[in-house]
Amino acid sequence: MRNIVLTNVTQYCGPGALEQLIKSGASVLCHDPSFADCASRENFEREHSVVALGGQTPEEIFAESIRRAGTVDAIVSNDVYPITCNDIEAIPLEDLRATFEAVVLFPIRLTQAFLPSFKARRSGAFVFVTSARETRPEPGFAVPTSLRAATTAFAKALAKEAAPFGVQANVVAPNYLYSEMYYPRARFIDDPAGRASIAEKVPFGRLGQPEEAGALIAFFASGASPFTTGQVVYFTGGWP
Image 1: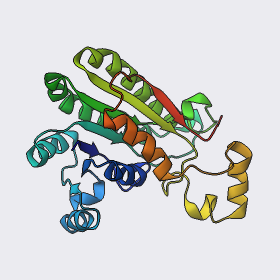
Image 2 (image 1 turned 45 degrees about the vertical axis):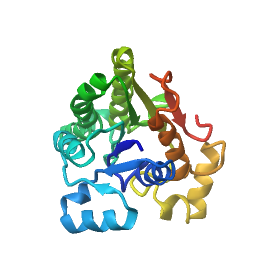
Image 3 (image 1 turned 120 degrees about the horizontal axis):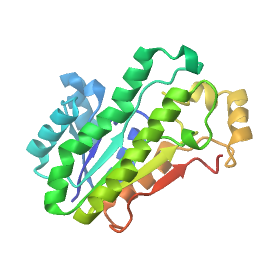
Image 4 (image 1 turned 90 degrees about the vertical axis):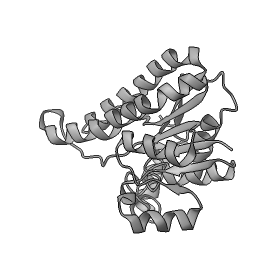
């Protein structure tokens, strides 16, 4: 059984990834900001039969994962931060810094924590959930576009550096994926006008579903194709 760490399990690609990882037979060690609360952590463990980690920093996640599982075979770095729309000259520096911390620095630190043990075992997989925004930048969204692209570039660099040690690094880059943070149900699924706006942009005519993205994530985390590394797969329903 593979031990797989999944970050931000209740947000973005987290729910779909958890469903598919469990279905694949993996043992999942879940991080989430809500798990800083002991009751929330225990309730999640009971409901899903997984390990809910109390640690919040990458270093704490690493230490707790090793303590509770012994070894970790894959990391799914599913990073999130709320998007705000600003012209470039009006971007608040605090928003830029906070987004950088959440979607660039956090996955890099997580990689630094786990990579030495992966190299020593000459196996392991990193899956970075970033964004397809870089393929078609939109006015007002320079911060998420630029910083998600930075993490995608980091994953490619990691793939080159880690491949001689048998360690994989791949990227799942969604857009138009249903999540309450980015494409909430009330606006884009329940509202006919919202559904129509999606259908105009996405060839599939709808939002992607979390379990569909989760299936792709689970494949990359499975180690089933160890020669596959440095790949960026755009989960976008044919957009752009």
